[in-house]
Length: 441
Image (cartoon, rainbow, N blue to C red; front, top):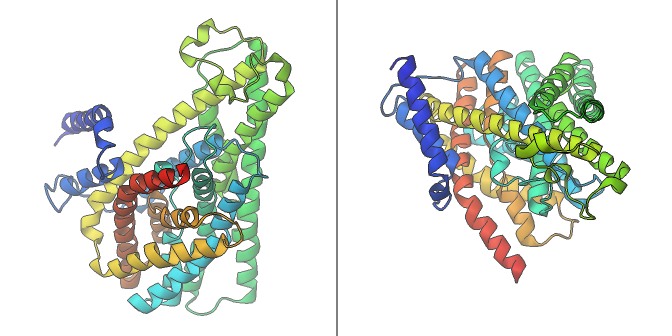
């Protein structure tokens, strides 16, 4: 099929998904599951019109997944309006740090004895599969800045943080695998100080400060000029700058993108507090809900609140579109590449990760939270894997992965990610419905 044929096919797919979304949402199979099915049908297993292997195209896979994740992480951070002192943030941090360590340790031990791969490669597999996905987590992420649901906020903050916290352990696994023996004290110290501590703290600091600074500058500039034109490029610039600057200084670009969204949101909150006397009502609404972007040219920009509201609203709209487009493309690619990497022997490991390792890790780190059992079990179950794992697979192959055991790790990871997209996607709506009914009673 030629260029025009693929262009038309893409248009038909997007049109069908857009027009039928209301009907699709009533059925058990999620939208991402349908994209996965499209990839499987178009791939070698069925029609054979697409042949894509993410390992053979690791450089391209790495870049595309980075763009999707950076945009998604930025939007996730931008939607969270609750101050850090809230317990929901604490839960997300506990899931992304000690919870992540427990999950990595559990997967590492179980995969070593189930598959027989070496300890370094078991650690690599654990680091690839441990983090929840920021892109596909949109199924259970907060809907907007007014959403204070504790489950959604906890899962959103976890998804925002844990990609940055898992990557250092993949780096450790690759170093260990290349060394062929235990790492020296000097190598471990360098990994701990640079790849772990600096990557985490530096990424968060760079992203937050950049988001805060650009947010303030953009608000002041647009208010001074009375400018109401679309400001999508502010979001794009912030995503690009935060990710690139952090990566340039060996910090986590993913954490920087997430923190940039948090920093931009903090600008909106501070502008509202500073100009509270100019608010038209007493409701503490996010600034983007105080302006109508469709009538922007008729707005009277008398207050910086409206300026920052337009900036935030445009950023959310732009980021959401980018996130959905890249997510659809990457899940279709996952379906296509599945034919080369399906491994049925990964099913027992998937079962243990979904039903034992992740839930147990969540229960342990939330032991003192005094949250209801249903809430904690929901947190344990709703740990969807996805595009982040594909990025880590590509990263591993670009940094020394090779051999049959590395292929086994890749096949196992892709199989488990595919199962997660389907199983977690199918169970999200029934679980959230059950939780809502329980809370109403």
